[in-house]
Image (cartoon, rainbow, N blue to C red; front, side, top):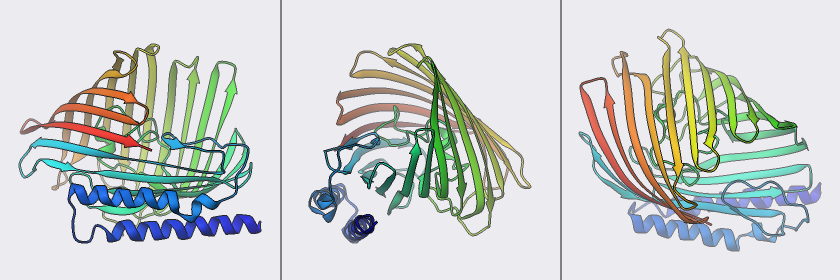
Length: 373
């Protein structure tokens, strides 16, 4: 227990210092070179911080996507990206910058207890620059069917939200139902999750309570909320699931669409031709106090040309509220060419055409490069 406390304090103070250093280096310059310099500080800090002195263990924990491991009980990793975005939209300039910088630490104290910390710096187009914790939780692993997490988690909702890192997804622009922030992307509270295998079937569940949910672009403080995500996978070819959540808005946040809300999300992912053609869709229904309900969905196909090249085609459609509280329809068609020469490097070229009702339409073109360590 004493070793547990020492390790936990070491992690806390190290990441607190990391946040301070990265934040300070943005005070006077927001250029691409400054962003790269700050990420270099982040990398050097991880390699030479007190976290590297933690005791080792022989049994490794399950690692997040993009991690780098050793025989020690401490695992670290991260990723960054560079984005050029051309926007044919009124009031929008072309964008060239480093929109995301992530670093995480996965610490297993023993076979039952695990801690996870993830620091992010976001400077995405149209969003305010932030440096904070995306995930910060303590996990108790009773068994594979039962794990308990306490702290800040990514809200377990459907497919895209689970694999939301820009380095792990197939497209550069997020689906519209994700861009609209219909529910908090992070939740502060208790998370109970697990997996159970029955022959060729695999059932996964996640239940969470929330107080103080948060989105990347704005903070949405909520009173007590809760949610449940349940899915079943069959023969390693198809996965179908349902997410339901309810949040009470205390009116203290900056949510552009406030009000108590109920969110229902249905999703499916199927390997139409294993390892060659994948189809994925997610459909969302939102009910809010004193407002009309909203619906949105996306559907996509990914075709693997070979092990390095792929094509991704996606159609989005969702309803949303205009500033004068009228419902409008937002549509988007996007086409992506992706290239992954190694597991540590990904490149994408993407074109999308979007429309809001019939009166407004615009195009986006982008080139994206992501690197992980």
